[in-house]
Length: 631
Picture 1: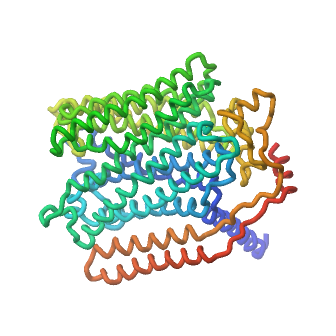
Picture 2: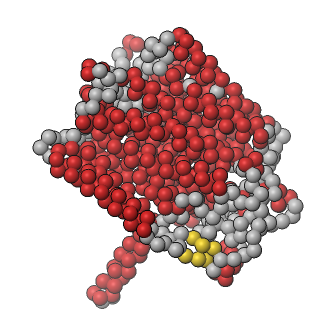
Picture 3: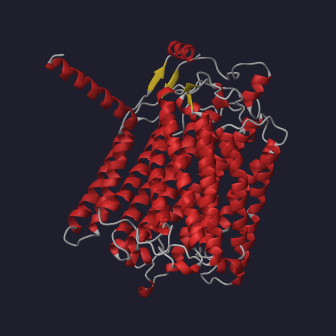
């Protein structure tokens, strides 16, 4: 090959990569954005998992010096913040983006541009937070960032926390509003609210909770931001501020956040259990009203995180009662899942193993939650490892198990290939056993008296054995995660191709179209005849869902790079504010950089508002060819 030929080949390869990169940076297709959320959330899940392993290595033996002092505090803070805000939340949005428009018979979300902007704000906010490791130190005030600890006594790591979470939280809020509008306004003809799949219902309630829960967090972080950077003294008690107010602000967000994460997992479990039991979900109507009731009650229980603050017996009693009450609709769901499986033709796929494993695990987390709801008992459990055990039984045993069930269930729909079931079951058993080995002993550690957030303990305190077991269990969870990554790589390279109805027993609309779906999702908008409408059509002998419209041209939005550039502009502004607080000499320049980032963002918004974007059309003939190819 000549030198010119080498140069041409290198140019074409470069051009191919740039074209691929441009496609992903400019996409507004909800299915591609789902994959971006899956990649981003998966990346941060790995980072948070590594931080968890570092914590367990430190606590595996008494008086270890692997991580000590502020370094341990930084790792603990980043682990909690990463897992809640940068792993669990985006993975929930990955499932919502991948599935909700398909389940309601829509061709896209209501606002594709805002959908892309929401992702890039989340992802770049996570990048801002994690660059703190290399730019002066990570935040060390715990994932709750209590004031005045975060605002007065810790270093520049708090700036990265405050600005990184503001970016990420703005993206989450945008995504929630988008899905509320999509579900309310874009359902296919015949899909009444009481015909929506349970995952769509839980996505709607989750989006509503985000709409009301994230603004308090945003306000709290802004106040801390002004305290930390401009010395505003909202929470500085020495200068007339009130630090307890921040606890209220945070937990008014913080407890609904638990249900923001776990309600979509409930929806996934409902879909998986019904599909692999080959039965309609038992008590559909009661499940819907239980979901709504959980969302409503989730805003009435935040003070159970503050029983030891000193709000008095009346406040503690009222919030204890509300906390116990929320267990009732949750318990209804448990029985509905069990009755769905009762008498069903159960298929124990990997997805269903995670769903079945979810039920007893989440029940254990719920039982310890009721224990913590008793104020007199909570005064003993508070700030001990008992709380750590309870929290992880809810978040991992509930949210992560649910997300893994959804990942194995909808992977064929997203990527057109079925994950290897043998490797999947290895992932389940190693992760499931490793999880219980890790966190069940922590109940006993808490009852013995081991406090949370401490980086070491003494050999004669009776904590050695349970900590050994807990650290060994964490290795099992890590092995499960590694096997999952291997499974994804192997499946991507040479996995089994999936049909439209990948499992052969699909019940809802997403299984009625090819895997992966075409960009327009549905060649013809479907007509919904009842709950589990695709299953209903199959029982009537139809291979496809009845269309609600004749075949015609389809209009789709154009890709655009503006959401990515707008997120970059706000990231520049965030770094400007962060470095403005580090040295007084560079403060004016950094504030100018922050102002430049905000100005650039406003300019890009103006360009978007005046830009004429007519989109593009799939013509009828093209659609016919695409549909033939899919068949």
